[in-house]
Length: 132
Image 1 (cartoon, rainbow, N blue to C red):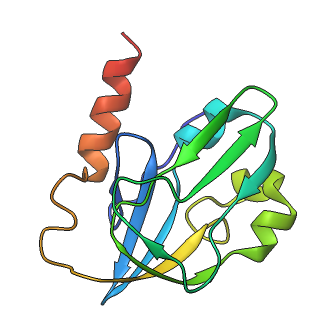
Image 2: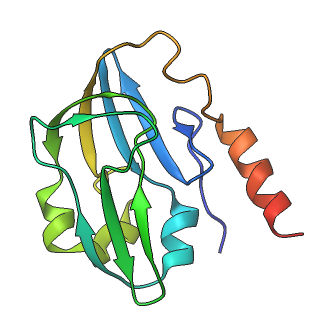
């Protein structure tokens, strides 16, 4: 299956993505990560109002294959979380870059927040390198 990696997103090597709209960051999990996890059975996300620090776990995702921590690509305050995905985590695979977003964060400091993220082409090249 050909996986998509939208160019308007930035990616972490831990497979989270971020889409910026001004100071609002929408964070989700890449199609690659969702495919690797398989059938997702549980999703744990932070509450609205919770402060996140870049690089520190903000939640977890569990599948029949594995359980993984989730990491934010940016620091800030959670302003929304996707209740639909919490209730039906198996639907993440249906539209990971659209309806399958996880949380929305008001970014605390846009300067340098995305320095260690990857473009879509860099992320895809890294994934292809992992196959070797």
